[in-house]
Length: 172
Image (cartoon, rainbow, N blue to C red; front, side):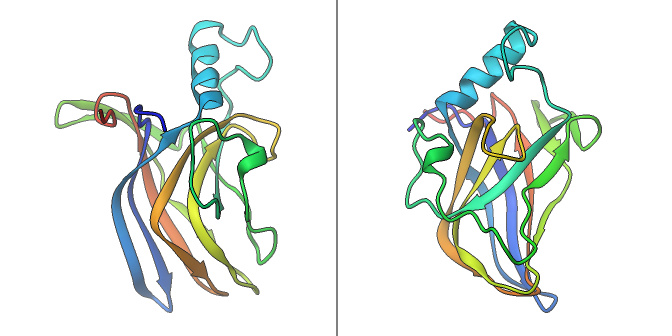
């Protein structure tokens, strides 16, 4: 697994009938090799290679891989919900991500991301992933495993806020 933890789930919770069922804080990701490639292409080639432009939107999804690894790509994403109102959630790079300094660390902070189940159950769910595309043709940038698998039933919501940084997320 990668030692660079680009993405951090500041907090994530599951809400049912207005009550928080569980909540976790400060979950760190595995940066995938293709995610590292995406960032380096966007930073240094300014879009000269396919799929290297900074996208207008980033996409966040849920899946049930047993474990995540730096070598994972979309072929490894397992159990992403396909029914029950599930959609990968978008965060616009044109206004839903702010960059700020907090306690001496510069971070990009996303808007609140919410998944809502409708009509069916999702799960078990174990991981959250970040990509540059709404389909499986982009770069799998990073994945964040929860500490335990969870099931999302009709009417539940899973809500989270992410922050993205380099200094504060590095773990050796």
